[in-house]
Image 1 (cartoon, rainbow, N blue to C red):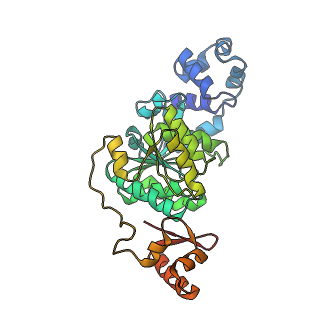
Image 2 (cartoon, rainbow, N blue to C red; image 1 turned 90 degrees about the vertical axis):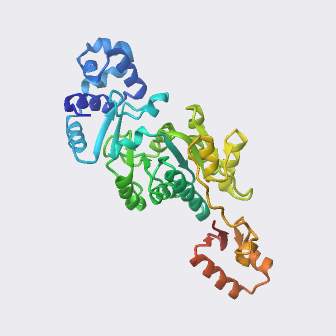
Image 3 (cartoon, rainbow, N blue to C red; image 1 turned 135 degrees about the horizontal axis):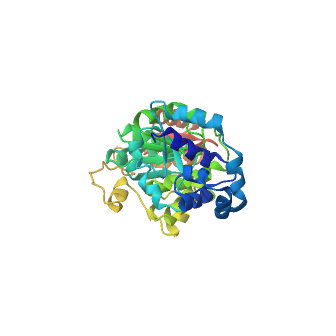
Length: 358
């Protein structure tokens, strides 16, 4: 937004405590732009939002507004409001679009509808590999990949999109000026080079627990569909998926082992009507995006497969179980497992267990 005075009024409106999104939209519907809200008679404002009008005329947040305007003036930073032509059109379709968004990176990506990929923060290595693979393929077909910059599946999806040379959008639950979590700092910096970081929260907002479920509606709202890779039954990813369904977006889920707790959330979604997907082509077909032929993964039991991987199967397996299946002594078994792990063909899991990778 180019008009500092107009933006200052938007900031004053959105920074006022007790005046949430619903009240802001009521005021904008009644008076027009925020400048008109503050120019109106306080009694008239009270008639629209009741006692919540009092803080509007008691707080001006001058220092924070000045700091925010200075931040927005820096290269690579931007703030867009509901009145801006650059506001993401997809978010105008949801029930509660933010009055303004804080952006870093390339805001043009927000005008393109992509695919959201979400899942567990405590994902398995195979789950992360799956998320990255889907993201790489889909980003290569021109679909921006949207996620939440969390550890686990989110981070893998962002990395896959970057590796595929496509765009990725991170919707964060902190102020846009904060890079959180710290473990994903380098990833966030890479996203700024090739994508966009988005927040509805004021600058400096810390990682408050309540903010992360709230931002999920924006992850789904920006997307044409949501893909859930791994999710426990109580996962926040299921919140995102259900919000997507409410917003009229497609919901996709990748099935997993019946023995895996991280597959149960996906299985529940599939029972509730989510589309089961096995390859990125399944999503591209559903979204009517251009298709390319994918290289199929080696089939279990094929000549190219290591005998130990065949014995491992597709579910996590303990060392004792693997020894019983193969008849190999433990020292030899550990040596071969280490070789396969270094070759990125299997991953070790907590509890002395192992899992094949695609």
